[in-house]
Image: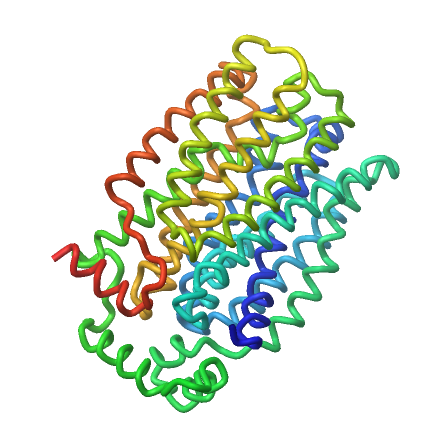
Amino acid sequence: MNRKILIWSITAALAGFLFGFDTVVISGAEKKLQLLWGSSDMFHGIVVMGMALWGTVVGAFFGGIPTNKIGRKNTLIWIGVLYTLSAVGSALANDPITFAVFRFIGGLGVGASTIAAPAYISEIAPAKDRGKLVGLYQFNIVFGILVAFLSNYLLNNIGENAWRWMIGVEAFPAAIYTLFALTIPKSPRWLLTKFRNSEAIGVLQIINPDQDPEKLMLEIKDEMENTVPNENIFLKKYRFPLILAFLIAFFNQLSGINAFLYYAPRILTEAGLAESSALLSSIGVGVTNMLFTLLGIFLIDRLGRKQLMYIGSIGYIISLALVSCAFLFHWEGGSMPMFLFMFIASHAVGQGTVIWVFISEIFPNHLRGSGQAFGSSTHWVLAAVVPSLVPVLFSSIGAGVVFLFFAIMMVFQLLFVIFMMPETKGVSLEELSKKLIRKNK
């Protein structure tokens, strides 16, 4: 693999580290904040906890606009600025509304990063390595999650302002990432869709010095000639990739993964663990997530996207059913953390590794930003709704029923994988686009 492609991919993927850190760092502070500000379960869930997720929804809805207009690279730079501003502002906040506003700003960065980073990496990666390179984004997400859990554990007992340090420490990696993002080139496929051919050729010659850049330019020109001005992803010919993006994002969140990551210490405490043990077990969740994501990245270009989704779906169904039973039948002992680790492993090797790779592959070049935005928006609307309801659902119908619902939804995901999901490994983006559009004609 070209060393420069790897370095640029890792740099873009660092947006995922900040995504993971920002998403989960709140889990160590959320109970303290509820006590500090005397918030009701509803206000705490929707405003204090949920506002970052609603920012993510807005970032995902509109992130396709800068990704297409100013390019993948410039969007990634602005994402770093948003993360930095959010971390500093949230840490210095003295009331829940100010805190929520700055968390919302960080959410904008998270939502936009799920569009710009996978799109950028998929467009510079050779087809044979595209899965593992885009998978670096997911690896960085889970690495960020692990570091956030570890950071929360280490900072938990430093005093009454521990929560400020937990949240504010993100400013350091955010500022470093922003500087790194300045060093990467613009996406050659984006440059070609903007008819900036000479710049695109320069980047393509660095990416593939042994290949003729004219070949890719002809393929993209052929794709562009089959489009109409100002078309969008909601045209009939793009219906199949649109449905695929919607369903993989829908099932990702109906597994309950974000609900669990946001409330891991609370769920483990509810299962009978002491608070310090729950925080420590959260680190175990982060380690499991990272190890099985590495396994998924290793396998994604070998077994393919569909095979990983089979493995993950079956693991989801078994682990979620066991978690539900443990809550419903009050199973004693240390079994609950093991069931939750199994759930995290199933997610990491399946949906976690596949989702951002798959969505970045199935749309044509000129609509990739818009397609990513649609899939990402679906993901984040549900990621905002589900965790926001967790405190209320746990106190009303109980954790056992909630996890049983997630298990049933994963049966439907397995049916989606069996009957609808195409395999995309090893196929060029332009060839994939032709196949998936042709399927709808």
